[in-house]
Image 1: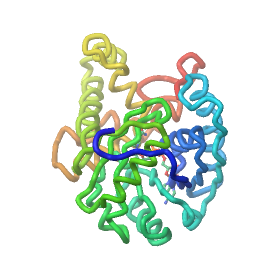
Image 2: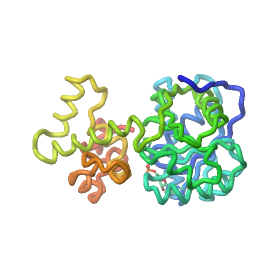
Image 3: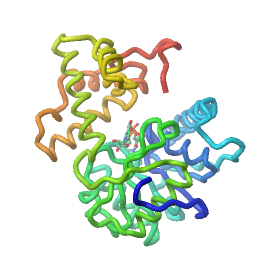
Image 4: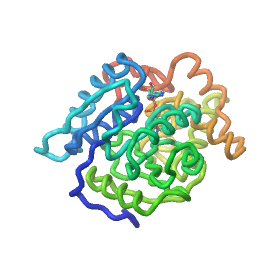
Amino acid sequence: MTDIPTEQATVHRLAVVGAGVMGTNIAVLALGHGLDVTLVDVDDETLTAARRTIRHKLKHAQLLDALPAGRPHGALTTTTSLSDVAGATTVIEAVVEIAEVKRKVLAEVSATVAPGTLLISNTSCVPVDEMAAWVVRGEDLVGVHFMNPSYLIRMVEVIRGSATGDATMTAVGRLLGALNREALVVNDAPGFVINRLLHPLINRAAMLVQDGVASAETVDGLLEGCLGHTTGPLRTADLIGIDNLVDSLRVLHERTGDPECEPCDLMLQKVRDGHHGSKTGRGFYDYQSATEGRI
Ligand SMILES: NC(=O)c1ccc[n+]([C@@H]2O[C@H](COP(=O)([O-])OP(=O)(O)OC[C@H]3O[C@@H](n4cnc5c(N)ncnc54)[C@H](O)[C@@H]3O)[C@@H](O)[C@H]2O)c1
């Protein structure tokens, strides 16, 4: 971590709103470090699936020695009632990348929790200053861009908005310390650093497939083999979720006007076809067979 302090002594009660790819990732990270987690989503079916996913990801994390050995897991509570975040010391918003949905959730959360409760958005692209206008106390809000899978990748991107208070930066440092994460802090902008670079790259990679220049395997193979990327952009797209990428690219395009951020036809088609990536079993790659399966 660069310029935010860390310590482990604070008692953390975490609430995570949104039980999809990232909500379950963050829950696994926190539970595995012994923190209690209240996980909120809109229906019981999603929460039942999330419990299953969390069990699976906890096993995956343990197999890879990604969690502290011998530490008892925190307790998981699932709920469809947003008012259950009231007793949390930190609320992490991880709902879909649609500004209007985030606006409603963040407004309700901030009206529910006590002043000084750490409010984190895991948004991919929505500027923190834009979100600060939706909450009661903008000084309590900070962006933390947890990576996917959050329990394997130690680095996070922390986004300090112009209203984010010093106490909030101290609190986020304490939380990330308790989760054994490293952070680099950036200033606010659409997509911040990582997704301002990564999302147009993925969009361009998909356009090359769309235009018949190369297959997904070849595009990824070149970036992995020649440029040393651990995972090519289209395999990364499947891991992120192509539906989420399209939403994120729209957020970026609306706020930057950059034509490279207008989601390409191939990605739009995959979303229409329900081929959202590894979470649906198919995206740029096929994950139906056991050997292809990825988390
Ligand atoms: N997928 C990634 O790799 C990744 C990485 C970093 C950040 N993010 C960001 O994290 C956030 C979540 O992304 P995801 O990939 O987990 O999406 P996802 O589509 O997998 O999950 C989103 C969840 O939010 C829930 N939701 C929608 N409206 C809600 C509401 N009003 N209250 C409670 N829950 C609600 C949905 O039911 C769904 O379960 C997005 O902002 C995304 O851009 C994603």
